[in-house]
Image (cartoon, rainbow, N blue to C red; front, side, top):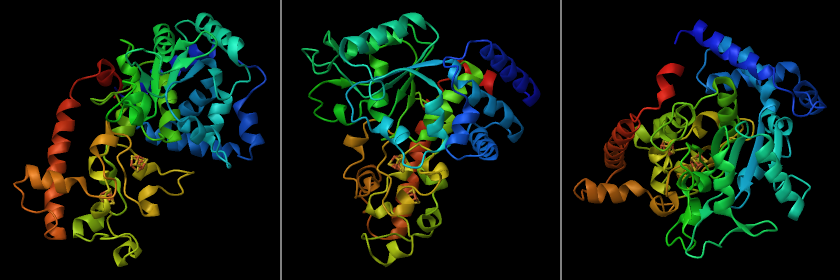
Length: 387
Ligand code: SF4
Ligand code: SF4
């Protein structure tokens, strides 16, 4: 679609949204941003970065800023299943709030167990009320895996002792869009790791509606807010990969944009944490980095206001945004490709030289990329229309 046509389409979607009532009249994004010490210029700079992240041209920045301003028109119901609340905590409890976290102050979180004051009967009533009142309008965000063990009571919530599975199913039925926030909700996470005693499942297994997966342990706040903004802008699903992850966020491997990649290609590796290679910032592959197997945008966006990220801090990626990473990516401080190399590539011995590891892993990753590319061809109907 040509830029001008797309701009018109997005603008008219926002015009429609702007006719909906504000869910909280007292709040304005300008006020919230100002109260937290950000200028309008900071806000527009943030909107520019989000525009680039969503793979839109820079000229769309005002439209993305407007989408953020209209984010209070869509009510959000956020359910907690079996999890550690780390996804919510990382987004909402930063000591120096980012504009991404301020968007979460601004949107209308109609139900969020960690944040709301209500408890017990009243909390249940609030949930039922929100589902009914905003039928087919609300965005459902679910954090955590869904236990569905034999007795089905590994997770019960609220005064009626409703199972998590029943609660997630019910809330999914009338949602306008469903986001699985974090690896537990997207893929089962640590709850579903072998031997998975509670038979924990991803959200997508308990509803037959499409679930957009935003994995990560936790996912970056930019990926959560970007998924929300994408829905506000388009009103449709983003282009998704084979694991239902938005391609704009999870389309590339950590390895593709890693700042240590030059060292990988040159065969310069950290052999042990704290050695000379570590001091020189060499590649962390030999101490377990799973960046070559992991699709996410951490190497591009980093964390904490773009300050740093795990690989910059000196530890390899553990593959947290991939399905079953607890079972398949461990041990976290050993290179997984050695096993692949020994089994798949004829047992040549991956540790013989750094060069060989480079060759081995490149071959292994090429296979991985090819597989990813093939499965990613399962087309999302909106993809052609949107991009
Ligand atoms: S293996 Fe890890 S540290 Fe090395 S270049 Fe790839 S992503 Fe970066
Ligand atoms: S660098 Fe790897 S382990 Fe760390 S958050 Fe990103 S995907 Fe997860």
